[in-house]
Amino acid sequence: MTDITIFHNPACGTSRNVLALIRHAGLEPRVVEYLLTPPSRDEIRALAAATGQPLRALLREKGTPFEELGLDDPALDDEALLDAIAQHPILLNRPIVVTPLGTALCRPSEAVLELLPVGPLPPFTKSDGELVHDHGRRRG
View 1 (cartoon, rainbow, N blue to C red):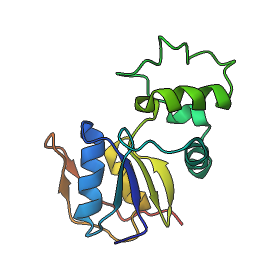
View 2 (cartoon, rainbow, N blue to C red; view 1 turned 120 degrees about the vertical axis):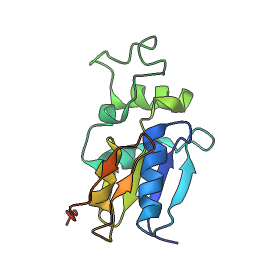
View 3 (cartoon, one colour; view 1 turned 180 degrees about the vertical axis):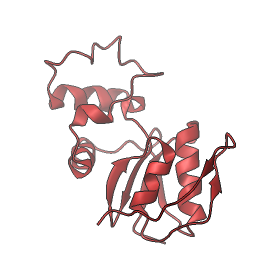
């Protein structure tokens, strides 16, 4: 077991590729299927802070009730956004990965490489056939 957590949606190709890349590195993360076990408001707030991005940057628009809830309104504060995510966890973009090197929303999937505490890794083939080369750059 490692100190890596992935907030994962198995129906998402990017999320599946990130999980596969972590495992390709020989690491077994704690997998949180956030649609089944949504993180608390405090956890979501902490995840956003750890990424260094505003909470709004963790919102997903595609395939969610983002538009119908009017979440594009810049006047909405973090509390309103947290209320929406609590009601509709699908609004939380994925995958979010937490490692000892940092926390990030890993889109595109190869963004996870800079968070992995090992490497460089041999080439990896994503589910769509795209080859990912790890250049060994890591945070920290």
